[in-house]
Image (cartoon, rainbow, N blue to C red; front, side, top):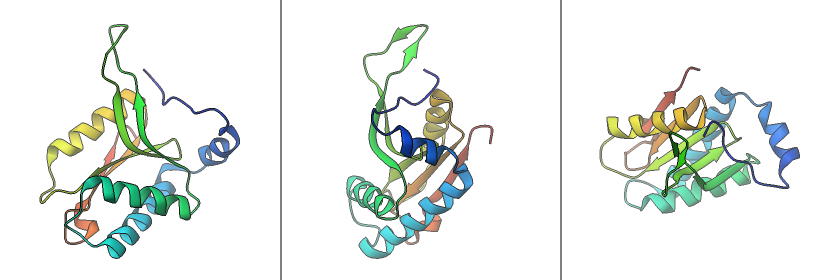
Length: 145
């Protein structure tokens, strides 16, 4: 697998979003995540609640985003039974891994870097809503950017 699969009937929007650099998307994501953290508070809710709220906030801000993307993983040409599941994919360029845990973990960063390598994307963000401030829970992960 070398690229993120595309959904039909969204080509025009994706072409517009393809022109937006990863760093600009990153700023939009950070602002949306801060808004979610401000409105819902944190820590205290499940990851799925924060993920859903962030999905909605990004859409409200006009940012192209897809949620719970299943991508096949192949090993030596064999498609694995279990697909890779991305929490959020923004602008077809930035993967977001949402967490709601007490402490940031190097494992979350390693997991996201693996996702980036498998999808051939360059930027991902771990957003841990389990921290007192969202900026304490924000980890930027790059793959050759």
